[in-house]
Image (cartoon, rainbow, N blue to C red; front, side, top):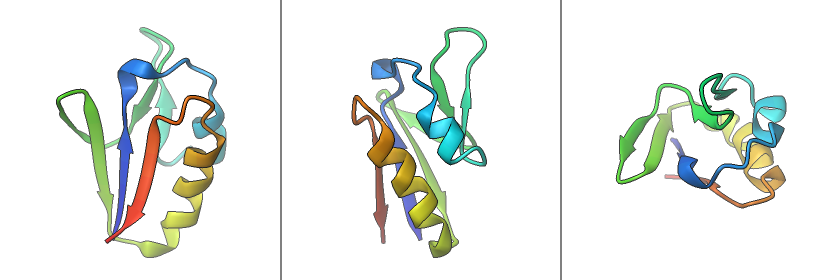
Length: 76
């Protein structure tokens, strides 16, 4: 299982994550920050669990491309 976490309040709206992983990230039209689709929010952190381990690389690329390092991915 892949766990993706986004600290949305620190997003600068660069759009790299959306370009690299459009199935998981979208830009909000309200505030220009990224949204982790189908995630749960807890204390400012948005988390999504993905059952397909093959998606780890896609999400990891988005995390590495983030200039403010607010996306984390891990395999559990």
